[in-house]
Image (tube, rainbow, N blue to C red; front, side, top):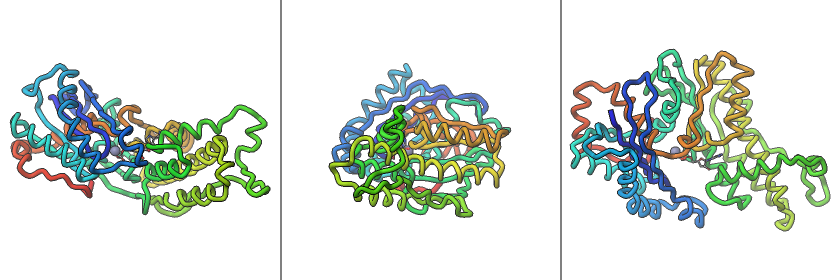
Length: 370
Ligand code: KG4
Ligand code: ZN
């Protein structure tokens, strides 16, 4: 069957068309068009909801047209429409949801609302044959701009949140620390690129890598690893961000060189990864999943991908490790279409019939629960 996915929960206007036959095969992405608003929002240092909505409105139909063209399909070829119903910025979500409802009505196609995080999780099912029941239970570390959660899945579409952040999400911390270090927006890729520079292959510079001279006194750059030793699977990143702020405040602006910024960015990234990896391994030891996955924008971070993989190999060699393709880590609509496909597979014929009328009921919900 052919599924059209629509995603507008934040600052990407995305439409994708996939082909999927059964839950045991890998869905084929026929088109995956993403129009990013990074340039528009970067001058504000973050996403401005009303500007995002105006941009989605301008882009949604051209992106839809391009997606159909790239897939070489016509509206009559579509079997199902899946759209992000929440959570996210309400003015932004409304554009995608209203577009999907209108298309469902005019084209007479069934419509399903998808939870954005469910979409991120299902990005993992695009590239790998992990759908088989032998890969469950699955443990998924969700790390995005709005969420940091450890989710246990006993089967498809069954989510039990075993831990989550008590304050900022990991991606939010990356964005805020990037703002403190004046590295630009979005913060995740900027921090990762800056941190990579601290890996300098030069002994004279490397000698100073983990220390910083403040008022003539050599001080170590070591940031906290919040809640790493707590006996639960929750996270907290707000204190880590504040620790970076206090550290930077101690440094005279004229001394905040690119090298020092890269040392701080490297230590912040490592502190975040240490907590994420440690809690994921701890949760896996308790729940014994067959597979560990990562999902969400922060899962694009190469160091996180690498270090979690190494920790799993070392501590839980029998556990499979699944990561999404980088292109499907950050917001896109292919993941929404794939999640829509798996939902459709589980629906009864009555539910499938009533999906033709979803356009009457579906509501965007900024705080939608998984
Ligand atoms: O999933 P996503 O695209 O949107 C939300 O659902 O929030 O995630 C966006 C977040 C942002 O905070 C961004 O800074 C972060 O993902 N991010 C990264 C990287 N790429 C994006 N964080 C760390 N390293 C990256 N390479
Ligand atoms: Zn996202």
